[in-house]
Image (cartoon, rainbow, N blue to C red; front, top):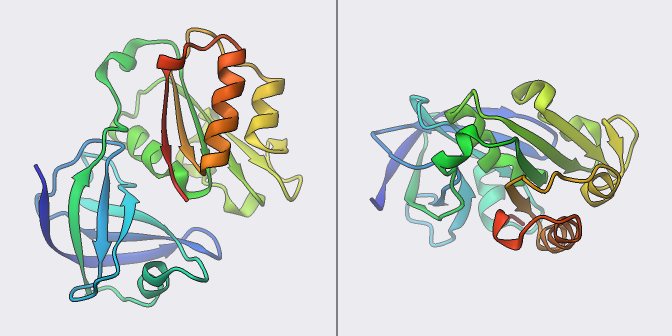
Length: 215
C-alpha cells in the first residue's frame, strides 16, 4: 500500500563523517525489506529516494543518509533536528527478500557505500538469514561491521584497515561465488555492471542476480 504522511524525527546518529542514520516514528508504516521511500521536508519540492534501513519488526523507521556536497536533500537532512518532521512517500520497489531464500545456500550480498541499506533491513528483519555480505568502502571507518558480525567482509580501496584491500570486484575474482548462490547487488551502476559480468563468468545464472542502483 502506498502511503504519504508526516513522520516525526526521533533521533540522528552519525556512522561516519559523511553518513548518518535518521530514526523516525513508525506511525503504522508497512514495508518489505529492500523497499525504498521518497523523502522531503514538508513544503519542499526537492525529493530524494532512500532505502529503508530498519527491519520490519522495529518500532521505528530508519533511513541511511550520505551527505553529498551538491545534494539538495541530503544537506538539508543533515541540518534537521529531533522533533522536526519529514514527509515520506512509499514504499516502492521490488528489490525484496523472497521467502524461498530463507532455507537456501548462503545468499551473496554485494554492496558499495550506502547501498548496504537494504541488506541491513534484510538482516534486521530475518536475523537467522544465511548470507555473506561483501561491502566496498574507501576507508575502514566507513564500515558497519557491528551490524553484521562474522557474515560481513569489508573491502577498502583507500587503506589497509579492512578484511581485503581492494574493490569488491577484486575480492570476488579472488574468492569466486558458488554456482548455487542467489546474488543481490546494491550500489553504484559501475560496480553492479562489473560484478554481474564476474558472477556470470563464474557460472552464476543471470536470473540468479538481482540488482538495484544506489548512487
